[in-house]
Every structure is written in C-alpha cells, then in structure tokens.
Amino acid sequence: MEYIKPLVPDFIKSIPVHMDFDGQRRAEKTFQIIICLFGIVGFVWGYICQQFSQTMYILIAGFALSCLLTLPPWPMYRRKPLKWQKVQQASGEGDGSSQKNKKKK
Image 1 (cartoon, rainbow, N blue to C red):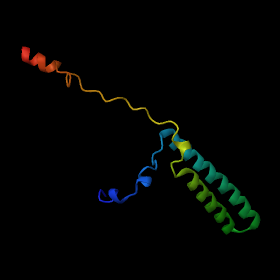
Image 2: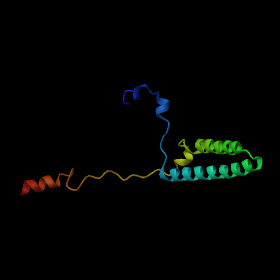
Image 3: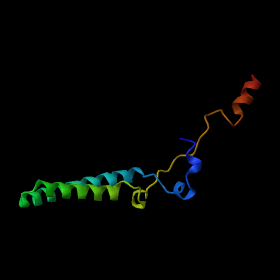
C-alpha cells in the first residue's frame, strides 16, 4: 500500500477523512431517522397503490439520501475534535534525576 501514496495527487491527500465521536453519533441518528421516515412513507404509499415496488423505490431513495448525507465526513460532523493530552515522559526518565541518584549510591 505504501507504493501507492506517492502516486496520489496532493489535493486528494488534503481532503479530511475523519469524523469526531459526536459527529458519528449525529450521523447515525440522521441515518436512522431518514430510513425510518422513508420506510413509513414508502409502506403507506405502496399500500395505497397496492404496489410493493413503489415501497422499495421510496426506501431505496431514502437509503441513497441518507448515504449521501451521512457517509462523507462533512464539516458538520467535525465540529468537536478530541483534545488529546500532551505526551508525558514516565517519572524518572528524561530529566536525569534518576541517573544522578544512581551515581550517588
């Protein structure tokens, strides 16, 4: 996979591909609401028309709409990024204090 990275243009590498946890929750909720609404409307319309195919067409349209709205990492799903803690060195490492104590003993 590493041999492909140099071939990818820079403008494609600059596209953000992450979504924060809150954005994931919102995308999942949006997906479920759209699917349920289109499923109910599709069922009712299919029942009125007595055509199961109409139900499926409406449900597929809802699925396509929900995929378009929730799968790409739109900016509305990247509003609350995680604040990572700074890297901390383990106690006694890096400050030289443990080295000095060992030499004194």
